[in-house]
Amino acid sequence: MNTRVEQGITTRQHIVDVATRLFTRSGYEATSIEAILSACRISRGALYHHFSRKDELFLAVLEATEKEISAASVAAAGNAADPAESLRAGSRAFLELACVDRVRQIALIDAPAVLGWQKWREVEERHAFGLLKASLKAAAKARGLRREPIGMLAHLLLAALIEAALLIARGEDPAAAMRSSRAAVDRLIDGILA
Image (cartoon, rainbow, N blue to C red):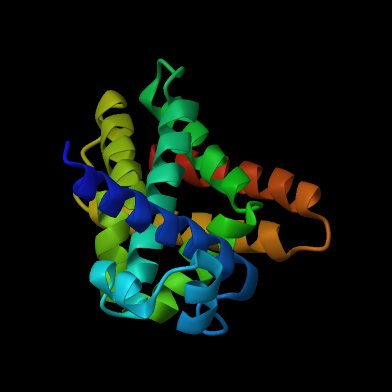
């Protein structure tokens, strides 16, 4: 690979890493372009070479965060032989990630506000929500269920997971909230697959 291309890739990744840290700490709205430039130690031109607007940079940060969420969910679900247990394991992994400041702030709080519901869902569809929907389809098929509204059921399960994740992340007793959320999500999955 050409040195200039490698430098460009390295610079872009550096910007995304720094912006991730700043967005996590202060949130999207409170993080200025100037703060990003200062923390990255790059010129405005270098930033705009890679990202023409702040929301484009946020999108890159969200994509990276969603890839991490998906990887953690896949890793957690990978050992389960039963598709329903795989769905539960992936859902539990998502709930555990709710305690990670970066995931909570970027994927759960800022993403819908910054990108709007439609764009946020497009990103989710490529990553965590896409996995959730595929897992739910596989679990329903393994149980011999013909669930026509699988897309709607996946949306409802995602909504429950996000709400539970926020309750865990913002609760006074995250461990207790995690236990009750896991139990509730397991019951929800069992109900969907009944």
